[in-house]
Length: 133
Image (cartoon, rainbow, N blue to C red; front, side):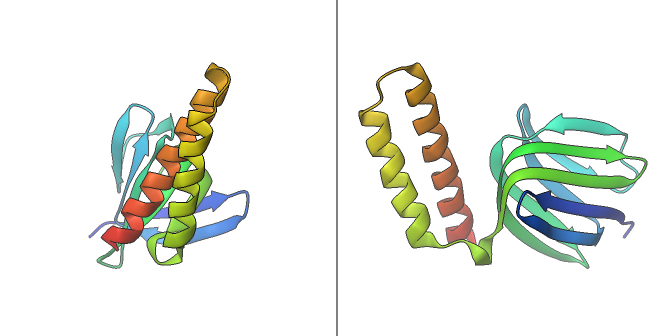
C-alpha cells in the first residue's frame, strides 16, 4: 500500500514521525482522512479520535486542537494535545470530566460555560479512546 511521511507534533514533543498509509482526524468541519497522494489541504482540528494506519496496523489516539497540513505528500499534525490510547490515564480522564461538570455548574458567564464544555468534551474523548483501546 502507498505511504506518505507523517509527523505528529504537540508543544510537548514529537508523537510520531515516519511512513503511514492513512490518518483520520476530527477537523472543525468533521472527520477527514488523508491517504497517499491526497490533494494539498490545510485544516483546523477539533476534538476527536485520531486513527493512524502504519505498517498495516491501526493505532488510535485522542487529539484536540491544532492544524493538519498535507502539502506535496508530507502530512503534519500540529496538535494542542495528542495522546495514544495506551498512554491515557483513565482515572485522570474521569477526574477531569467531573471537574469540568463542576465548573459548568458554577460558571459565571458565557466564557466560563464554553471553557467548561471544552474540558468536558476533551475528557469524554480521552475516556472513549481509552475504553476503545
